[in-house]
Amino acid sequence: MPAPTTFADSLARRKASCSKLEEREYWWRDHQQWLQACGYMLRPRYRPGWTPSWHDKKRSFIECEDRIPISYDNHNQLDATRVSDGKMVTLKRIVKSEYPAEVEILEFFSSDAIKDDPRNHCVPVYAVLPVPETEDTIILVQPVLRKFDDPSFKTVGEVIESIHQIIQGVQFMHEHRVTHGNIAGNVMMDPSAVYPDMYHPQSFLDDSLDMKGFAKHYSRTERPTKYYFTGFERARRFSEYPHPLVPSASGVPETQDHSSLYQQGEFRTDIDSVGIMIKVQVLLAFSGLEFLDTLVADMMEPDPAKQPNIDMVVARFDEIRKRLKGRSLRSRPVPKWREEHSLVKAWKDCRHACRMIKYAIRGYSALPTPA
Image (cartoon, rainbow, N blue to C red; front, top):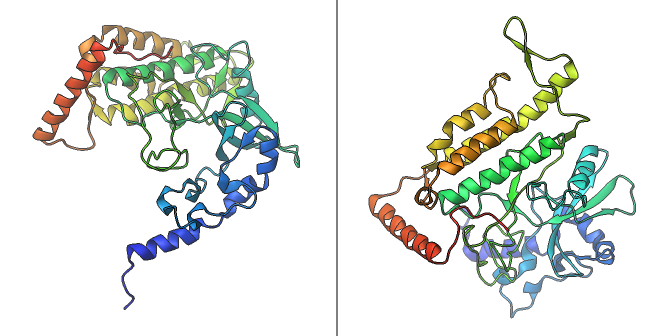
């Protein structure tokens, strides 16, 4: 019978595994010097002649940031530091022939004419770097982002502000005749305000950049943040906004041409996708937000004649938002996925009340909108 695995055995195997680059990391290592010449510095793990820092006996393996490899499920993206100002950015590798519309659409929303519009929630592109050995591959330089609901929401007002920005962003895209095509799962937040000193972007535990502890962070109420759409692989840009559906003599809506019907479907998909996202990640996750049930159900309505367009969604949401008072907005969204014992709930409610008193004294808005 084999001997049981000890912690020391597991740690030794982990050290051996992290001491060499994975195959998915080779591309970044091979292009490190070119990226540096372009003004973007990769972490030490990807630089020429890298030696694992934990080989120095004075350093603990756990405290060495270069032990963390690139993510398995997103190896086409890697963090870097912009040399000119020290800002942390994301480098995204794209094959243009696979997603020809993505680059064009993102560059359009990053153009001088509309990039600073507060309703523009498309992830900005700081620069486009053509990879030298191929004409089909480029690098998009973008901000570092994280999932929109991480860290967790502290107040109902924080949830409402995130939804407001999301549907506002969809309206802005649709006004410019652009559909996203896959919004659910591709809503992110800018962490720079909430995490002023940032965090290790490849760590799953919110480790600090130097791996010597957890990264300090604030709530969204203390440091309002902005939300962005990513993942524009399925995005489409149309020459005109689709004609509205018109009732026929039979009462069944119809359009005058098939292209308009196709476009209607693309725009409807975005609204349905946002509805699904709110349903799954908000309404099914927290209690206290039931006032959104009807609107979200209508957004997911399969009948095209009954589903509201994005302008209707924004108008109805704004009416809901106006009716919410400060006490409701500052209330705690209680998770549904775990039952809170009465004593635990009382303790959390008390702690939340103290936090809300602090927020009120400091003048923090119940709807934390970024400047």
